[in-house]
Image (cartoon, rainbow, N blue to C red; front, side, top):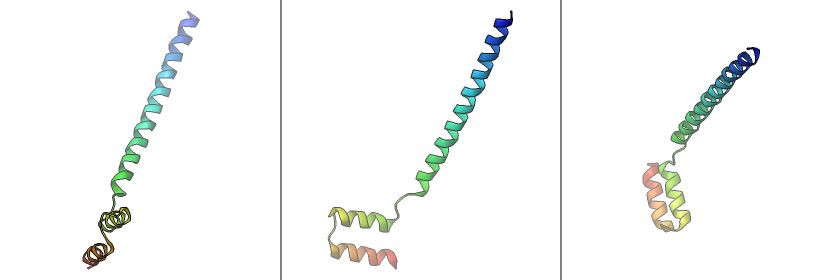
Length: 70
């Protein structure tokens, strides 16, 4: 009978540990996804990346940059 009590208590302890881990993982996932929402590229950053990749030339870059900053 004593072994059954320990076995039941062990399952209860395992349940709480797993529940705690799941809650922590959910919190971390929520925090990581909210960080992605706030780190979106601004229009100027996107323009700089396009220029760096060679998608637009310097003249186009300067024109669009001027438009964005006005």
